[in-house]
Image 1 (tube, rainbow, N blue to C red):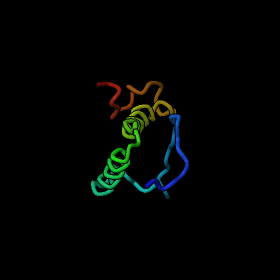
Image 2 (cartoon, rainbow, N blue to C red):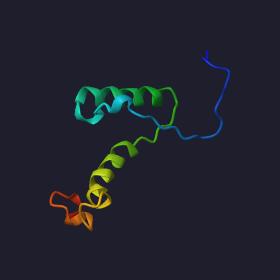
Image 3 (tube, rainbow, N blue to C red):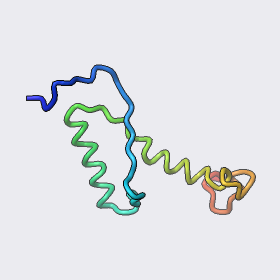
Image 4 (cartoon, rainbow, N blue to C red):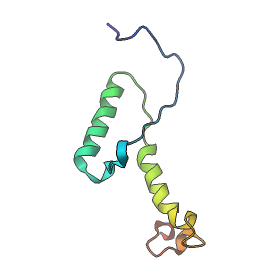
Length: 84
């Protein structure tokens, strides 16, 4: 029996925010909980396109020195992944 009488018929976008900026990706246990939750939702029939979670973080780290004005180009930052 369904929990709700409402049905979604069209795809929609949903985003989540981490409460109090908890460092989610620094602890394996927290990452495991997050991905287990995604797996549960997918098993329930929800289509999740969650690849953007990690990709967004990498792009932020990659672009940040240039965007913050520390260097003219991201590849000029000493520890930049833009050089590779």
